[in-house]
Image (cartoon, one colour):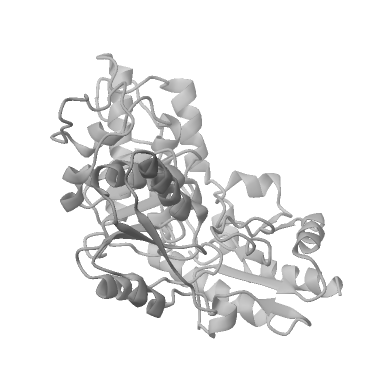
Length: 434
């Protein structure tokens, strides 16, 4: 398979054209899109740190040269605000932001008008809780949460419960559980859902356990009247997502986990839910506040107030172009293959203790995430030992909403620039520690 991507060009132009776009993926014909050595040539950090094995991709991904160049060229050649002036450079910046929005929409099989840029997935998830929850939750309403999901999918609703309580509205948090193998315990969802359930917050792929959390099954259980807020931080850019078919109401994701810059996220809102939202931040470029509040404005006007992280928003376009040049199915298949290879390499280690996920469920593949411990060795010691060999993994606080379960495992999370050779190096280093 040959992958040929467009020749590089200047990110932002200064001609009379009002439409500009961020840098495309740099010219790099890859003889094999599955060859991590070829893909690594697109990432400057691996030229600077060739011996580093980066296995913390569920926390953040490394950035291809096209993303880095887009950020640099915005600040050096086209730094201007958007929506503030009639001069050409400002108009071009506005056009580039909309090009990034369209690129993200295309990747997700969505409409650009249903997408807003936020400060990250955490910001997106908080926006759902505040913009929808403040306007729509009443005494006795219930929100379903899994305390083993990421804190960002859990804490905004607990925070909202406190805010509403201070104004005399009492809502109930109804927990549901995760099976020992790493996916949701559907029985606890069936037992928890009621006629007062208004929304269920869930993960698409779990950030520690690496399992598909079965959106269609949960939609069938809760029915059409319960909203679903989906954290897609570990699925966007990893697997194909078709929001025209996915039965959810809100989708939140993070740019920096899919090769873009930090400080940018995406919130997708189903068209049927947009009239239910209120503005929770107002100011420059945001919605005007009226009595009573009105939502007869675009989603972007309602939720995108103030100057955004323009450079990182622009970086979303080359990040999407990189994903599309490699191929989303190629990425998904590669991560599945690496997951299986990692499991096979780890399973015979003395004292290995797999966390929930592919190591326990016997899955023939996965999404690039496996968590494990080794009997008799603390996870912090494992992390320090691996770091001394330039193997970077996640230990300690995994941002799980349930206290006491955040430090049990080492998490290895992979991306397309990782290789079987790096997995072998990880396992050999672990064997030497016994």
